[in-house]
Length: 427
Image (tube, rainbow, N blue to C red; front, side):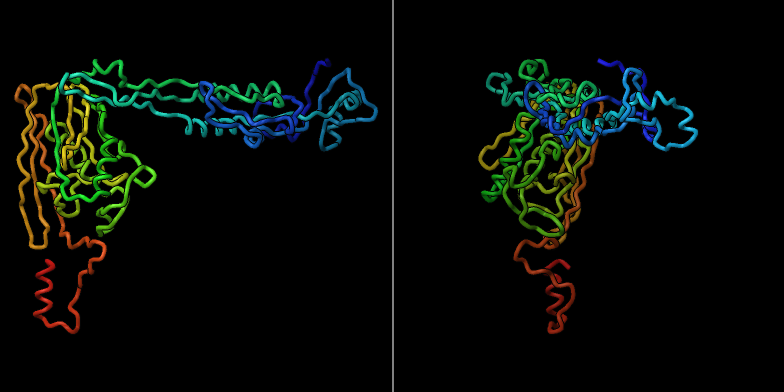
């Protein structure tokens, strides 16, 4: 096989961004779709279209003293100017032959790999657990799954190496290099988490709820049953809840949105967030975000002890400020929703004062507050928070079929009629 001694490129090639150049017999017809796999399971595909985005054909001249052609006379310059001709011998012009080289655009490969990494990379999911109060033991509700992160640099290197050798021999399957991200909570280490007893509880009553509202409460509650919260970890209700739509099992029910009370997927989920909030308060956890409803809702009595949520905001957030892991188990007892918080008692004392109503108007609007005071086993106050709620009138959020409130006196009404109407509607 002839050894190439000198590579003379056209002058235009020298203006390109520096990249790796490989000599290949490029033939698109020989390429096939490549399956990108992890542990033998297909995750993505590398197609001919993908490959052509990061490979480019470039004409070059190769000088070989052993190659001679009287017919194929190739001058080593594109612009046959006098200075150029003076730099090349007559022999070189007859011993140079045209070849097609493949230029590999490394940045294009990197963009492709980064894109599939975003699709493939997954965070680990912890096992969901159940605390058996009869035996004080922990059982597994659902197993853990380790996460994965694609080794992008190794993947880029592997693809480049294949192109370097022979693009026509791209494999049908390419196993992707990755790193495993282990889950924190598994059935094997559950006994080491310090979950030994009930440390707090939240309860709410949803008596009078429609079937669709109860369905949504049940569906959302399953997202939180068996959840384990690590020490110093911040709990985010909406992050754990995830999407709320028909595809994720929710039904349409009344929600407060856009100054109306109207049907939307997931109506009733605030029963779950309110119960979780109450459990966190009584457990003595640090609340970092909480919002009251727009107007008082009878499902959340006592008024002032609720927490509204809507994906992605407003959210309910709190921090596990105990030294051990906390396990949440959810149960329904009749029309009562119960959030049980299990962990290990650290000697803290929790006191709640309220809710107290500070202002109540005939139109149903009101203001309330309550306090959460938490002291450690040494008697030091570690939390002393006030939770204020400002509720508007329910009449400001009409239900479907409600007649909109008048904003000015109709021409055919008397002043007495208008005064009575305003009094009845809290205006």
